[in-house]
Length: 576
Image (tube, rainbow, N blue to C red; front, top):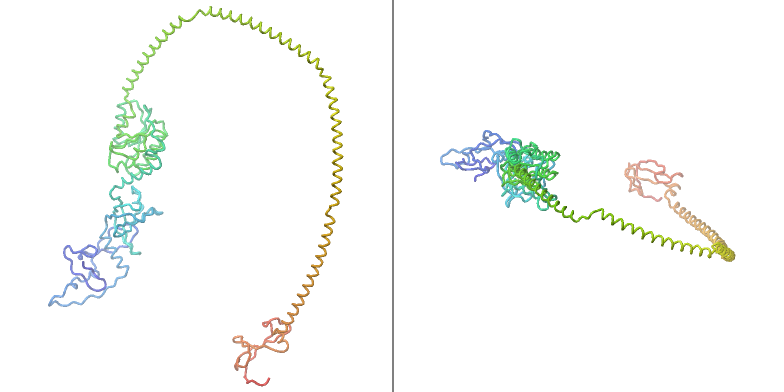
């Protein structure tokens, strides 16, 4: 494959039929006009007239023929980075306006704050950045995850500022299975984990009423499913009441309408709710695979029947509902018993009940006749009972008289015993004994008090002999003596330290340069650098010197008096 080299002035030979350039296009095709990079999939740019400077002279690349006149090569053309990127962008985007790419999802971290999806598609050979805007991401029917093999449909976009190309995805389909099938299985697994469906569901399916007073139906009032349901229902039982909640069963927003219809019917007096629609494709029945509808069915306080599509169609609503009907007609047959069968059954039961009652009455009459033969004349029984009562009364009277006589004799014996005991004498004896015990107690208390007082006096004497006051006075005296000695030692130490510091102060003052200067000496230093002049070699004629004199009030060298002098001449060393 021949490649066109920029900036050399060489041009490729003319393209023949079937010959392609680097990007798959023919050499003779006019180039596309560059378009600016945009964050969203760009539209196909309009064609532009060919640029001679870009294509070059095709004949210049042909081999020289004998006798052919020579041509001057064109001037070298240098492209900027932006121009080259724009040309590549125009070529790539026009060459790949719509592509299908198969790969494995990698680096997916969920939607960003604005709902856009960013991830990569990779295989064993390469990796491709993919962007999917929020408007398309909202239409995904399945959950995207790393490692999922998908087929992406979209256009190739070049982002010029970063020099990167990426795929702007419009659709995503799982490889090997449809998006709806994957979304169906993912939602089914999530609801099973929460206990809404499956063997571990939180609430078991509820029993449907045998003869509901009113049936709520959620479906489209213009659909064939409603007509089939009502036709079968009223053909079996014309007296059943039906409350319809009209809702779209297909298209955008239909899941919300179906869920609201279930919630509205649940607040009425219906005994059962039927969610139904006719057959169709998976896309047409997808409303009943939405999570919003499934949760509304599970939250319904009354039983829910799901009659979606045909017998071979299964939806999430079928698993969550309390009973699944294969068709709308089957739901009507289950909820509506045949009225004629009910009337015939009632008539049969009424006849059987009447015959059973007649048989029971005959049996009771026969038993009453048997019992009547056993019954004795109640007047004879009453006379017998009166005789028994009279005999019992006489016997009781005799027993009571005997008991009364014995009680009187016992009471008389107790009275005589009390008279013999004379309680007044026993009371006087007890009083005398109490007086004697009181006197003995008083004597014992007095003796105990006297002994305790003597013991207390002895203890007081021993306490006074062992009193700590004398010891305290002695310790106080010793403390005062030691305090006086400590104060004297402190004064002697302070005086010795003061004498030592005064001596050091005198020695330091004698060695102070200010002290020396106060005896008539001065210090000379150079004004240009502040250096002290120690010999004539430190100065030169014309140099300005500062001479400091110490007065009596100067404490530091900076506080001394100073004069300035200019050196006019420098003499050699002489005998000072």
